[in-house]
Amino acid sequence: MSLSDPIGDLLTRMRNAQHGRHTDCRAPWSRLKQSLCELLKAEGYLADAKSDGAGPEKEIVVAFRDDRPVLTLKRISTPGARVYVSAGEIRHYLHGNALAVLSTSIGLISDKVAREKNVGGELFCTVS
Image (tube, rainbow, N blue to C red; front, side, top):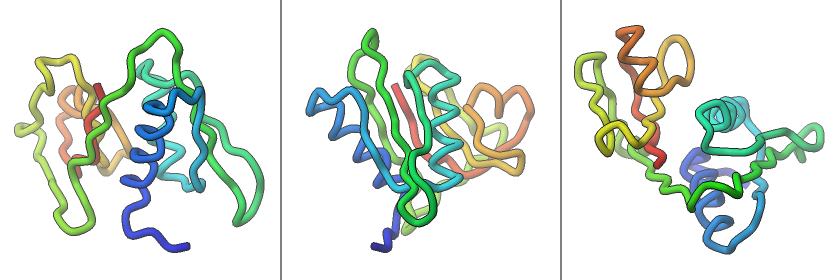
């Protein structure tokens, strides 16, 4: 099955799983999804993100943290309306309490790292 917005699909699967009180969720695997989940894991929003299976049936398994409330995942840039920000336009989301994920020339990074390295890019999503 072909998806027009695989990142939006992953975020929706994660939202739905958390609202259904599941401990983890599964989604079709891609390098972009894997790096997004690894970034969220490194920032402390997820417990684990690992791949399962091989070939076309490969999936990413995202495990949620028990000690955190339900994540607020918001897709900003969509396939129909891309949102790009320069290094000077990156703002603090929720007064610094939320994480913004940017796709830059150096890969997927958080808004804090983007401000430190003075790079801009496509604003994928915010997580709080």
